[in-house]
Image 1 (cartoon, rainbow, N blue to C red):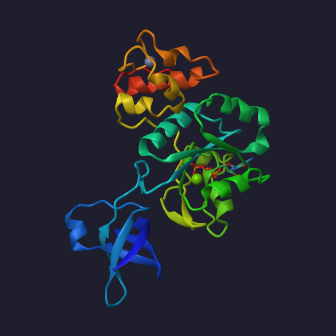
Image 2: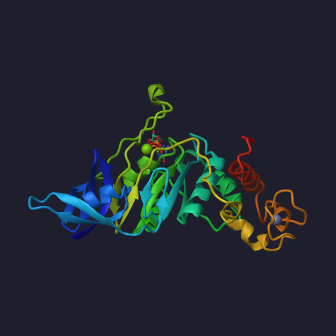
Image 3: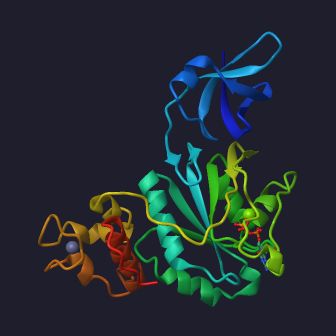
Length: 291
Ligand SMILES: Nc1nc2c(ncn2[C@@H]2O[C@H](COP(=O)(O)OP(=O)(O)OP(=O)(O)O)[C@@H](O)[C@H]2O)c(=O)[nH]1
Ligand SMILES: [Mg+2]
Ligand SMILES: [Zn+2]
């Protein structure tokens, strides 16, 4: 028996990183019978047959599970948002932040394509995140600005790159792990428009941790969650949410809401608050869209 981490699944096989290298594994009867699902990032126990073939015997408890795309034991979600083209969808950023909070994964916001924008744009985006404590790093894969800071944050983490299609996730991966060279998209190519360049989910070893590229998306719904869980996904509400008149305050139409009172752009940004309300309506299945 041997410990390992699933790097990827492909055609019914799992590729498991072990001390002896990457072993192609099938599922053994027990794990197959239990209808247990296995995802990249899962820590598993494997056995080896006489001719070296591997089989997954068991799985260890997950620390976290990201659902779309499914990756287990992620410790850092890098949300990549472009400072240039395509224009950053800040509601999508807020959805991804909620997703990270809900999954118990630390988010890090990477503002990409700094070479096509100026510091003013960076500050403009950051201004909406007062009181959140979220960390931002502005980068460029052309001028290489900010990449040292990214490298430092990623060491030892199991990191997933997520964000808008064309934001530069794969370009960033390729600079961090030059030996991999995944396919990147060309924004000028019309035939490529709307298609995702990145398809497969795979963990690539990186400085004591792993990096996972994901296909970009332009639409995402907040996960199914309770109202309380949604509130707790907005860290800037925290200092005020226990001061509202009602303990059950949803910070919506209730009187004497201290969260609402602090939506002034200094303590809580109105754009973030509006997104909170939109998500609140969404999780209650109200078909109201502000976008
Ligand atoms: N100017 C500039 N362009 C960049 C930068 N990073 C990436 N790009 C370009 O942006 C385009 C999209 O980059 P990708 O890395 O494929 O974007 P992605 O986020 O992986 O896209 P999907 O896989 O579709 O989600 C490519 O043409 C890149 O060359 C950057 O820092 N500056
Ligand atoms: Mg990509
Ligand atoms: Zn309130």
